[in-house]
Length: 450
Image (cartoon, rainbow, N blue to C red; front, top):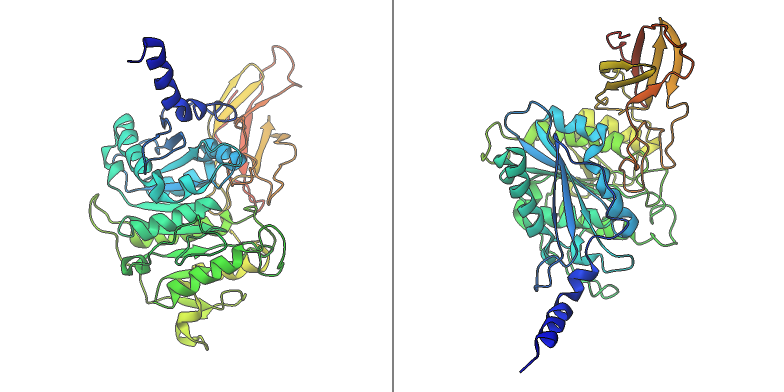
């Protein structure tokens, strides 16, 4: 018979994997989740088939929405750095603009994968992440007062291993997926002898009705044939051909500027998802997703730069990239040439400008098409400052919130504020703030405040 000390030791030994995976840097620092943000976190499980890494899910609910129509999932990639970047995904103002337009929640997971650990333990949904995700929707629905969150459709965006996850979820739950954008990563549809630990998925007929976009960087095997990510395009091409040959609604948008980093993809991904959500989201919670329209389809060579109406496409249509409409096709043609997707509309004006001493704070929403590059502050009708003075983004267009490798804002979050260091003590000034999108268009000024 074991002594009490031996019994305790045995219990601790059994719990050791979970203890070792308990929240540690860099996963213990993240923005506060005060309404309209909510967060749940689950510890790692040692049970077979359950998620073996801790995970937290952070969600943003558009203020004032009565009933959610869907949830947009922004899924990071593999590795500790990418997993950490998921901590800020729900705080992205640009992705929030898409969610708000469609009365959707914006959800960002952060799987706490230790460095060099097996990414497949979460990016293959069958290893417990699908079940954890769905439990998270139930618990977040209860926290936020939106129980319908557990039943609404999903729009999935994933980078790298996140693309593998988003594609896998589409194959497993096609009746729930409104659309899926796969940045670099795709699921396997047949075993790969070179990567025997990655299990193949089955392409079910229902998945052929889900619009999917494969989005590799050109330096991931399209024009650059060697290097760490050279195998990305062959995997994407194989997945595309398998789905499209059976009539699947799948396209390819090759990023002409990048390798594995996300670059400027959001300026096409968001309009593409916007078009898909507009077409597919049902008006009533619980109703089935609507079918994509087929009367305005355009087709293009998968690695080409010109798209045409389907009736005018010269080659075999089931070898062509599928684009749902003329508007999307025109955005695609610009994106695959130089990523400079056009936007003729200015961003919304900032709101709720507050002045406390010489410190200004305000609220802002991003331009749906082009996001936010920054703000112009005026004092007494004259230019005072650009906020920020110089935008930063090592991966693409300068953007107000900055961007990490997996397309999420940097930490700490950039605040919507400005301090007027040149203000004279005791003197009152009248301030206005103007938003600027990433193509340089300016909003109307906000209501003045002093």
